[in-house]
Length: 502
Ligand code: ZN
Image (cartoon, rainbow, N blue to C red; front, top):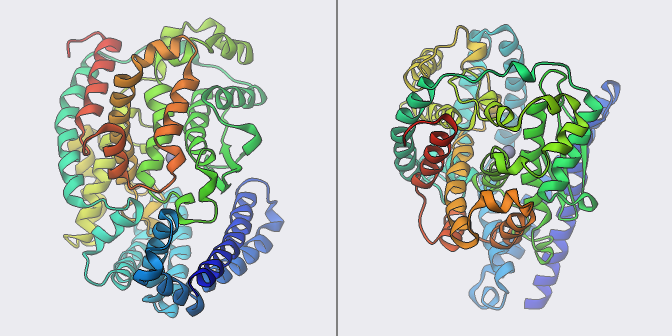
């Protein structure tokens, strides 16, 4: 009986994975190559496979297998990978089973309509067009998580959905710590003035930029035999399976730097996916839904490594070969350009320091929405006030204010903190890495970046989602989450770069 249920369960997981595989491929195609006239058919196919996939993951037959395997005598006989898989999937199954089907489909529909309304409202910089949709999405999101976890507070459930084990008490502690350290640093940086970046102005060949992306991906350790690249409106990474992890990029003629850093960022996500232990295939450990941990890997490559002078030393000549304009730009000028810290209104264009404050703002807004029940029509004003308090600037319209991100339009509340959690994990990983392997600058300058990638593969990537982020921090750094290592990294780096006292 035991073996039988386990075999059936494994077969069932394999079947579910085939639906996921097809769905992922359909989404990838929709965002990259699908022609305008094919979009509707593609959407229909996506709807068909999503419905089938939802049915499989809520089927009674599946629930019975999970419950059977959770019985102590069966559970104890499973290996650790299967134990974790059964535990996690049973939790997900029970959460989903509590959601009435009718509610689920109307929630999905409301979110789709809200996303479209948001796009229009953003273009028109008119919050009033979006407000009724946002109100509906907020109230339905509260209901949605209440079905999932009736005894928990809504915002706590949302935080846990995107970063398992995370809670607002921990986030309050580390975000406050960070805010306190960042505001004086930002003041010192601002007093040092902006660099002159006119040497970088110009028009950059798009085909050559794609070659730069290829060069950067190979440099950081992206395996071309286990991945692919394409173009899309917004860069993203998609994991079909461990042997096929793909990244996209978006190129602009006037700004080659943005695509370079998108390549490094998405490459970091992909390297994580490509290096998960193949033994986890078809189990819950293959899927890393901890967004903070995932972001820590993309942002480690993008910021901690990519924005260092030493990262570029071995490849700066190559960059000049591919994009000849860079031959005229000294490496030091380039370094100032990729570390140009200044308050700005748009999160996705922000430097690594002020970016933190953009996230703290969104976290405080989400608490106002879910805890204080702040009325929707008061949110734009609250946003602008917080922007002024944290960054000293005020949006002139809602398009460059509260309407700039799509996350809230599709109900992804609780997602934003994971970006900053990722950066804080990075401060800690950097500290642990240097303690073990010595100066990162020396390693990079000597062209030994692969040693850093291997260290990350070994310490983090291979385990997929076996450990929660808090467990990963304990295993790799031997301590719990703290903002201090990130602050130390910022303070040292910018004191040197801008020439002021720490
Ligand atoms: Zn990312």
